Image (tube, rainbow, N blue to C red; front, side, top):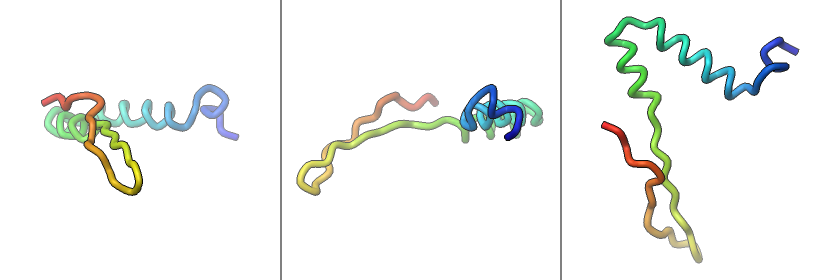
Length: 62
């Protein structure tokens, strides 16, 4: 087993390495990478095989 697994989960490891990589980029590439890292969460309730209205959990930041 690798050492990082004894300290935190794989998701946390991936988050830390991604942040380190983004911080090492030049300004223009760093800004583009940070924009790609933003996500939006939406959900939709389905009943009887028909999807309802999609609800956005957090508004997109522009």
